[in-house]
Every structure is written in structure tokens, then in C-alpha cells.
Image (cartoon, rainbow, N blue to C red; front, side, top):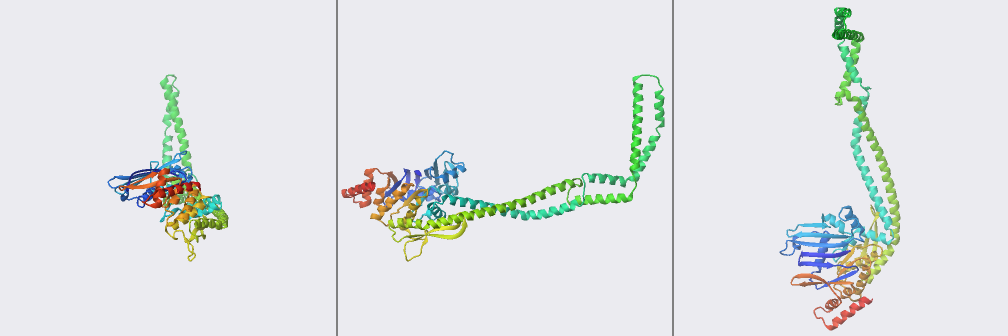
Length: 546
């Protein structure tokens, strides 16, 4: 609900502060007084484009702010909470627009800067403006569908269908993405399989390369190794004099510490030499000159080194590289399994969506006649005696189900029913929308409704009927009506008057006496008499009695 509107330096308004109440508020004033300024300010709050000519002459900028109670507007409250703009228990929301003299503008919600797109999304559920040129809320197919679903008691199922559609399409997007990605993975899988086949053909065991490399060195240097070890062994055999020294030292009968240490070290050295001799003999005995084995080892070594070079890895890393390739291939195979599972999930979601959509379609068609009859009754009472409403169903898969729903209106039997956007203009069009709003309000939580001259072109009984219907509508939602009809103005629970004085526009609330004076002006123009005041008093009294 709109609670307050504050305007500063906006066109011909220097300062304006308006309090709005629940129920039906009527706004009156002479032609040209500036009632359209009110709509212009509210349109800016709703995210319409701004321009420099909206700033009052001589001012640096224009400021428009509006306070809303979000108690009955869960959609906007949820959006603002998700965006961190509204606290959990907070119900009031302040929207502000600033327009600079150079044409630039900024938007704020609870003093948080927001884009115009976000502002439009946040305010769309708050206010519906119905004027002779714009009835956007009711002309949108989404809202028309919602009206019929609510009327037929299918709000819960309609929401379920939307959720199923959203989940179905999101899952399909994931499948498409993975399938597209899989095309690239398919080439990668083919390369991995080729590389694995090639490397696995080596049948390379752990640490085999190091062993083969060692065997190759030994076989290729066999003769040199044998000659060198033999030469060393022969040198060891020439250590007899040292062994004799060991025997001589053992004959010395002296317990000197240095002597004992020398004898021990010499024995240890000779023992190590003996060990070295044995080890060298074993090493020499296992070395063979075998050209055939050398060729085999060389061939195997070249094969391993060639494969490592081709795959750009170190020969010692071939085994670990094979393991990495196997893991990557396994992940790709698992991804394919995931695609299959998602495809099955998408198919099930589509099945459930179509099932629930068919039920929803059945209920829509079951209640469409009652809905149309109810709207036609309202149109007739509003002076459109031959008005007809037709619900058009077109096969189309969307978040609304298996069909799109559009309201078509006929005001002349000589013409076929047409879209709400194409029917008669002016007050007649606004009254048609009003009739739909009244029927929809019984089952749909409507936003605040602002009507600009819904009574244009009518008077007397029809104007009174419009006022009564607006009052009835006001019991379900906040209704703000700009009117030139005294019958409508008299029925309002709150009455505001627009005054233009010395090129300055102001808006003021009216008490009972002021209302009588304003109604008298609306009835008689400038020539207000006691008779017109009496009639205005009677009109106001009868309006409150009915």
C-alpha cells in the first residue's frame, strides 16, 4: 500500500507531501491544475525514464520519494530481502528518485542505490496505473493468466506448474551444456584411449626403466668393467707385506694404548680389504659380455625413451602418467553417466509438467465462462451494454502450462473480439479494465490501483455505479481515483484536491465542508450557489448512506 508521496522541485511543484489511506481515495481539481503531475511522480517511482525538463526551473535537481507498506506484497518483500535491502521483520519500504538538471537520475530503495531495471521489477507488484493510455498491468498476458487461475481456484497448481517448468528447463539447460561439453570431451577421450593403448603396450613395470638403464650400462661396458675389477683384485693380492706386518705387530708384547690401537686398525683394514675382494669377485663373476642381450636391452631402452619423448614426459614418470590418464578417462566416463541421469530427470519433470498443465487447462476452461459472465456484468453496469469478454487459449508451452491465455474484448457486435490493447480507447477502455479488476479482486490480491478518469464520458447513474464499484474494490485493495465526476468524488472515503495557484501546484486533503465546496464546484463550475452547495451536501450524504 502507498502510504506517502513526497515531491520536491518537480515541474511546477516546489514541495508536496501527500498522505494516502486505505480504501478509496478520490482526487479532484480543475482541468490543468496538475493532476497529471501526481501520476508522473508515481511513474518515476515505478522506474520510468527521467529527463531534465522534469526539474523545476532554477532548481539543481528534483526529488521524489514514496513510502510503501509491504505487509500484503510478499513478492516485493521477498525480492528486497534476497537482495539485502529489507530486514527480515521490516515492513516499510522507502523508494526515492533524484533527477538532476542535466537529465541524469538515480534510484534508491531504503537508501540503497538500485538500477532502473531492478526498481521496475521491485515496484511492478506494488501499483497498477489504469489511465486512458496505459493499462499495462492488465494487458500483460502473465497477469491475465493469473486472474483466471485465481478465479478458478488453481493458484496452487499454477505455482506448481511454474516450478516444474522452471526445473525442467533448468535441467534441460544442464543437459545441453554437458552434451556440448561432451563433444569436446569426446575428442579428449579418443586421445586418452590412444595414448593409454600406446603406453600400456610397453607393459612397463614399476622402476623397470631404472633397472633396464642400469643393465644397459653394465652390458655396454662389460669388458671395461671386467678389466678394471681384475686389475683391482690383482692389486689387492699384492698386500702380503702388509699382512706380514700384521703378524709382526702381534708378536710385540706391550700393552701400550697406541700400539693396541694400531694393531686393531690394521686388522680392521685388512678385514675390509678381504670383504672388498670378495664383493669384487662376485661383481666380476656376474658380468658377462653378451652382445645379444645388449641388443635386446638397447632395443627395450630405446622403445621406452622414444615413447616418453613422444608423450613429452620423463621416462621415469611413464607409470604415474598412465595412472593419471586412466583417472581422467574415468572422470569423462562418469560425466557421461551424469548426463544420462540428468536426461532421465528432465524427462520425468517434463512428464509431471504436462500432467499438471493438463489438469490446469481443464480447470481454466471449466471456469472461463463464469469468469467472462462476471466481467460482462460489470461492463454492463459500467455503461458498456454490449460488452463481451472472451478467453482465448493458444497452444504454447511456457511457465503457464500447455497454453497461453489472453483476454479478448468485444464492445461492438459488428466487430470480432480483439486484444485488450486494441479495443476502444479512453474512458471506455479504462472501464473495461475496471470491470476485470473488480472480478479479479475477489480472488486475487491486487496491488494499489490508481485510476485516471475512469468516469470520462459518463455521468449520472453510470458515474454513481463506477463510484460504488470503486468503493467495493477499495475493500480489497487501495484505490486512488482521479475523477471529474462529483458522484464518484462524493463516494470516496478520502478526498484530495489539486490546486494551481500562481503556476504552483499543491494537493490538500479535504474535510466535510471543503468537500461540499469542491463538489459544488464540480457540479456548477465557477457559478457556485447555495443551491449547488445544498445539492453537493445531499450528494455527499446519500453517498455515505448507500
